[in-house]
Length: 328
Ligand SMILES: NC(=O)c1ccc[n+]([C@@H]2O[C@H](COP(=O)([O-])OP(=O)(O)OC[C@H]3O[C@@H](n4cnc5c(N)ncnc54)[C@H](OP(=O)(O)O)[C@@H]3O)[C@@H](O)[C@H]2O)c1
Image (tube, rainbow, N blue to C red):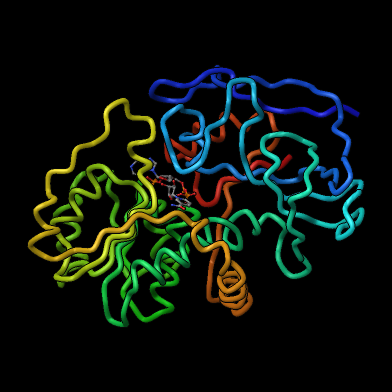
């Protein structure tokens, strides 16, 4: 048996293309003492991967040219040289875009009641991001209005549903009528605005007549700038992601910063790892809501490792509808 992997071939300037990746065969890895050999079954594709392809300074080191693309996977232990794991265990790993890999740092997951892939989405990093970003930084109070962008996606869909569960009014922003319909009808948000219709300012005024108390920002750019005009007194902005800027060669320059002073807005960036010690709390809460049927969740699945580059490019263009995964 051979391993197959996707490595970074070049650093994109602007939009990522398939030429920025190279698919190669490699010898089967062998576990050292304290490691397990894992067959990856699902690979998560996430917007942060665009940042790792660049050389710009960030909160973690980027991928080197020729190195396997970074990414979380869930898989099955084929061979164990680690005292806590045995063959057949299901584990969450950071093995990246490849079919097999060895690591000593894997987490055992129990998928008796949920599909294994959920540990890459609603019960994984995106779910934790939604939970801690909203709870700890957004701090919505019952009756307040919470707006979230990329509302049909992995993080946004959980943010809006949690906001509703915690007694707030949830308003989504998403691209296109189909996504907005899903956000309202399936996810139960109070409203959803199609930003691609081109009237975000007017539509926000209608959907949030009393203003916005929490804006959970997944996209940055012009959407964030427009939101600044709608924020209430003492409101909070959670800076979770800036996807509209990830492929831009020039960052968007905000015009409406004055609103922060006038309305005493608190705007804070978040990185989910800061809550690593409390992941158990979020997992328990999210799994509880899921088992009670209080959280809905959708996946966007593409098949085959060789299609991962296409999948990432599609995700950055909004072609995914729900958490983007690759079935390996
Ligand atoms: N800070 C953290 O720790 C952390 C952790 C996880 C994720 N994040 C961030 O959270 C955000 C959402 O991530 P996700 O994994 O949940 O992805 P996602 O929402 O499932 O997928 C990305 C979505 O972004 C939207 N989008 C793409 N380009 C856009 C643009 N130019 N303007 C507006 N929207 C655009 C698209 O939805 P539409 O079709 O609706 O436009 C697309 O479906 C990303 O910015 C990501 O970097 C941050």
